[in-house]
Image (tube, rainbow, N blue to C red):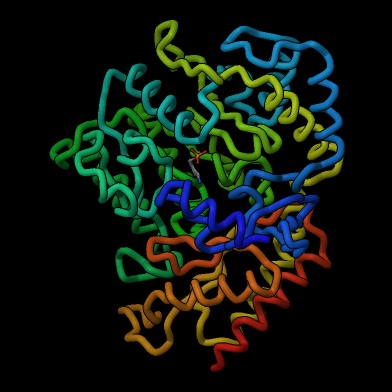
Length: 441
Ligand code: PMP
């Protein structure tokens, strides 16, 4: 039973474990958009390995590719030596880059986590510029190592570990619903852009010229907050003018999730450095940093990692990219996302417990509010983290797995596989609608 495994897990695994506390199951099998526990109960998986499983669980063609590689005699572990599989993967991933970066791209394979690829990106920018400060944004999430944690734009787990890497500066992110300037709407993005520009151009502004600016074009863990295109363009213009490398962390938003291959493409900008992990390995561990050749100034061995040569992940990644292209899954993410979003907006129209529905493609968020609390200056009710947790528990009991996030844990996050069907989308929406209905009005 689930109880048997959970009991053993609780006695043996770290107190830092998180998902088992919210989803008390032991999983036995998974296929497509569903997972099944050891008692035979099936759940619609709108977490999908935190956005990793673009093609869902155990996609038959990916599994077949992996079996072929496993029986081919290919060395599975090569550090940074090359192989035909790796050579192909590089060609495939470079093909997805926007013009302006594609022609002069360089790639560094990292220890297979988004965290390590962020570390690499920051080290590269510091090396290339000879500078040390980094600009990040409120609400940002870039990973769990001490370097990436120092760029986290909320206190969270960073508060527990004291002094981190110095030199991080946090600027306002254009989160209009909780506008840092108390304005909201389109004004939020234009004020955030103006603030960014003025602070960076002011020689007496109190910060050194940074080695890099790092951002997510859609904040994920921070509460599913898409940055408006004009803000992204303003940040790109200022960083280019001042010679500051711009790092786009596409670990969660990349690989089609938002309805464009990269979330930054909505703004037509071209970053200097792109960080990728999660879906890029087709469900297996893989992380890379891709950057302009001109930044390639670090020395041999400047970044390493024993498992940076995971051939299986590269093969699965290439296969995933091939299937995504063949089946038009980036476009499908946009279409499916519109359907899910429309459903969520219908739910929001019927309940006082939803402040806002946000997101792009199949990276969607529902900001849960507490209508009984005192509204903020913009008239929005306060965050409702306990209510969000209740909804999460209730939809789980009804067979839907979804994550919560945001600075206060009050945002329900939906990150289903890009292959989720219309029927499954409607099922998820129906379960959510019932959960909100039960809260009353
Ligand atoms: N950057 C972003 C934007 C992320 O969402 C995450 C993971 N949620 C990371 C970095 C860290 O990736 P990992 O958990 O693989 O280290």
